[in-house]
Length: 384
Image (cartoon, rainbow, N blue to C red; front, side, top):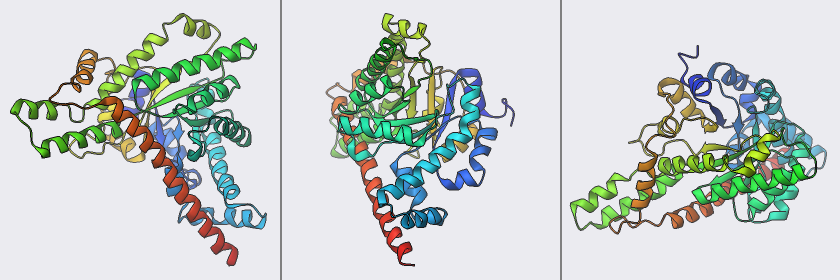
């Protein structure tokens, strides 16, 4: 596919947005599929999470030989899990290393999340981030740290130590602003110690479809309960499927404001890379909406969009590339403000808090399920 035929390459080369994939398994590494996605689809980075690894490892015989080797070495279930995952991450990093080199460290990253059950433990997050980074031993690995109240101080600290970080589970604009300032403080600490800040990279993973799913559900319940007027019904229906994109466009405006600050300019002069906004949770949950709406509507420079495989194929087929991240910004502010209208009455802060708690839970449960299934597999293979 040429650039003209491939919307993904157009998004990257014409509009300055990087397309990463939200999926990783040993199967796509060893089959050559990952290399093919890089060369043919233009994928230039990859993200993973406990839910992805649960799907990759559970019930997949491709890992059995390494599990048996771990059993033979007397490793615990957790040690076996880490050996499997770290090996996949290292191999993916090696596959993406040419992208990392060609883009001078802008792209080519592979993200791995610290254990989700420590999301609210700052010191444990710092220690695990250090250990993961050292154990994997690849300069293009990114450690994922949740953007919780306890996670952000950990993020700031490990940035100051020279570790690339993907801050995940960001929903509110305020949380995103706090994340970028934590990045700035981490870089400032590192620079104050006379250390190089030009090789560091970070992205802020701003979640999308989960916001619309939550708010649409609230709207549907209000409509089902009955409304007083046709005007109220129209107002409620008018915001369905629109809040996440509006929220993201406002976050991008905050990004632009921060990079104009004196503190950021001082770091930029020392070679610092901006912390790019990364659009996450981009598969459309409602079949009534376009399956590429979270791609088409948020294309713009200094951003990343991480897509599951099905959305990558949909985008390659029918994305309509154009720089839209700064279109209808006034309308985005108005739409979020309209949530306070008595006829709508949706508390956005409450929604964001709920989504963050739920987001952590959605990573903890697959992690626990994976560990349970892995323990079962270890017992089975040990008995063979």
